[in-house]
Length: 229
Image (tube, rainbow, N blue to C red; front, top):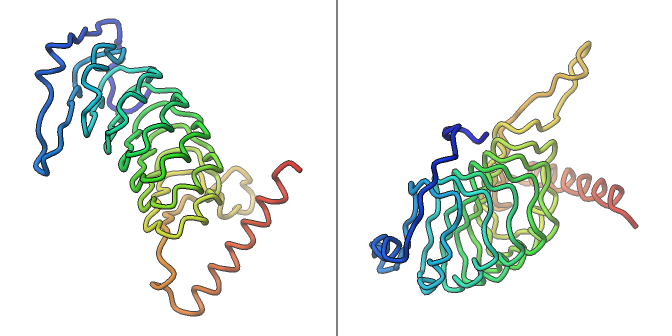
C-alpha cells in the first residue's frame, strides 16, 4: 500500500456534476482548475467530462485505482495531478494530452508505464516517486522538453539510459532506489544506495565531463548488448 493511505477503501463518495462544478477554481495565474482532491472517490466521475475545458485537473489524494480512457477529453490541461492514489497502470490515451506540462504520479502502485507517455512533447516535469517501477519505457527519451523527473523510492537498480538523450533535463531524483554501486566482501546481497542527480555539462570541469562521457558510453553499450536484435 502506498504510504500515508487509509487501509479501508469500502466507503467511497459519489461526485455529481453540480459538486464538481463547485470545485472549479481560478489559479493565481488565471488558469481554471478542477480540484477534486481529498474527495474519497474510488472512481473518476464520468460527469466531469462536461468540464473537460479545464486548464488543470487535480485528482490527488483519493482512492482511485484506474484512470478512465476519457481522460483524453481534457485535451487543454497543462497540469494533471494524480498523486497519492492506488493507480497500477495508466491508459494509453494519456498520450493524447498534448498540452500537458506537469504530470504528478507520485505515491501510487505503478509497476510500468505505457509507451505513449513519450508523446507528451510539452512535458517539463514528471514525478514518479513512491511507486514500484524498475525501468522506464524507452519512449521517455523523446520528451525533449523534460527538465525535472522524480524517481525516488522505486526499484531502479541502474540509471535509466533513456534519460541520457534529454538535453534540457536539469535534475533526476533517484533517492532511495536499490542502485547497485558496490558489492561488499562476504555479503553479496549488500547494496549501497546513493543520491544520483543529473546536471548540465556546462557545470562540470573538463576532467569530470570526460569521466561522465566515458561512463555514459559504457551504459549505452550495456543497453545495446541487452536489447533484443
